[in-house]
Amino acid sequence: MDSLPTMSSLPAIKALTTMNLEVSALRGIQLVAVMGVLLLLSSRLFGPRKLGKALPSPGGLPWAGPVWAVEASNIYKTFKTWSEKFGMLYEVKLFGQNLIIISDPQIAKEILAQKAKTVSDRPSLALVKGSKDSGKYLPFLGNNDHLVRQRRFGVLINTWTAQQNYHGRMYPESLRFVNLLLEKHDDPFHLVDQVCRRLSCRMAFGTPAPGAAIATAAHNFMQNLSPGGQITNVLTFLRFLPKELNSDKVNEHIRVDVEDRVWIGCYNKALAAYNNGTLRDSYAKYYFEQREKTGLSEEEALHGIAMMATVSILTLIAPLQRWLVVMSEHPEWQAAVQNELDNVLQGRMADVTDSPQLPVLRASIIESVRFASPVPTGIPHRLEESMEYKGYHLAKDSNVLACDWSMCRSSKFYADPDTFNPDRWLNPESPCYKEPLTKFPKLEGHTVFGWGRRVCIGQEYAAAQMLCVCAAVAYAFNIRPGRDENGNIVHVDINKSTPNVIPILEENPGLVFEPRSQAHAEKIRNSWTAMKAQDEEYVNDECA
Ligand code: HEM
Image 1 (tube, rainbow, N blue to C red):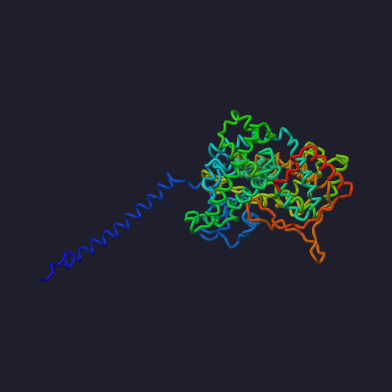
Image 2 (spheres, rainbow, N blue to C red):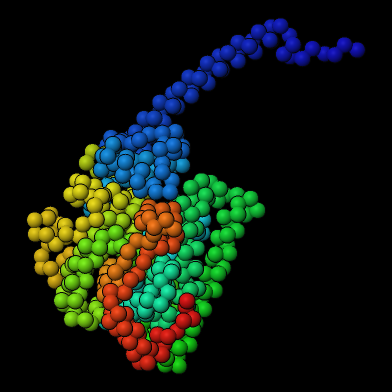
């Protein structure tokens, strides 16, 4: 039996259907066009408006940006090159993230400080889960309640430590450092790492003992949060892969596990010492005594104390390393600092309280920080709302970076910026000069400490530690660059460092620490022996 014709196989119906199709296709196109216009109009009327013209930009590929032009290991140098071409405020899209780069302190102030309400958030860290709202990592918290509480606690404990003038911590550890340099200076950067971690753990937990464990956790943290540290921080979509396909995630899992054990262990030991009356002055002791005043839960306090220890290790290694390197290249400035120490202190070693009498030493420190910024890209602030700045549109969700390298190395702000010259802070003719010299030049307030509501809360600590450790080194040694097997001078390249947010020099610099005289060496040894006799804890080498 013949099959019955279907509706669409009949010629008349076929013609009708085709016509209908053509008409409905036309209608469809019309509809889409009308809807498009409406959408466009409504987005203009009700959607996020462009608040001004677009910022200058180096452009580049749609998602990746101008990747070919980026010096990956020193991205701050690329930022500076772009600032020379596109101005003091520009934007660049890199791997899907819009970055707004500021290269002028005045613009940084006007955007990051004066508009702090909208620009005090942080971007999420791709690998570190819950970085913005777990309450664990203060410098990476979002603009939320955790931040308010943790910052308040951080400021409280730092102010309290500064009021004590860091008594009994900075000087003994500086003495220990130079004594070790005297005994075995074959790896000075290892000793720099050590003095930073011992000091930070004394401040946080009242003892240097956990220094090595806290420092290892700190370095691992720095690596896993830095774009240069793990590929997932650059190609952030990789975080959606299961850990079987992304080893960064496995690594991060292990890191957090170790960090939790170290942090909780340190806290519990401090608590036990407090309960049996042996805990020394420290952030932990402050918390146990002032629990009510801080209003923090035990978990919040644990994180706050451990994070402060972590940050102060990471941030101080880089500037100390750089001061040693630049001083080794400038014997004339070593001599100037040594003259000042000899004249003012008459053979005694400096403590934090001597700072007002030591402007030349302070100038050498602030100039080394300017010359070789230890946080060269700055730390990103995230824009929570779009805003207009001087006719330019700054888009919501952009990361705003005040690039310290660009500011510190710009001839707009410093004459002859690529030259290390502490005199710019001491010469009344120089625009950097400020009086009184008992106070200026001063490290606190430098652009390297950031901006607005997220400005660094450890500035006094940083200034005190730099002053004490650098004074001890200058008192004891003439520092010279090393030589290779052919007797040629080896210059340390300060840009050859870890590609992290805080770049650390990893290679042994081979610097030579030559005691200024037999008498200086004796003085160090004797002072150290006396210190050990006074306080057995300073012998503690558990944290090697
Ligand atoms: C020379 C040494 C140091 C440098 C160069 C430095 C630099 C910075 C920078 C650039 C920021 C971010 C600012 C911003 O987002 O605009 C910051 C934040 C911070 N710093 Fe420092 N810092 C140093 C030492 C310290 C020390 C010794 C401590 C602790 C005692 C510390 C604790 C903190 C904390 C907790 C934050 C986070 C603040 C927040 O996100 O709200 N810093 N620091």
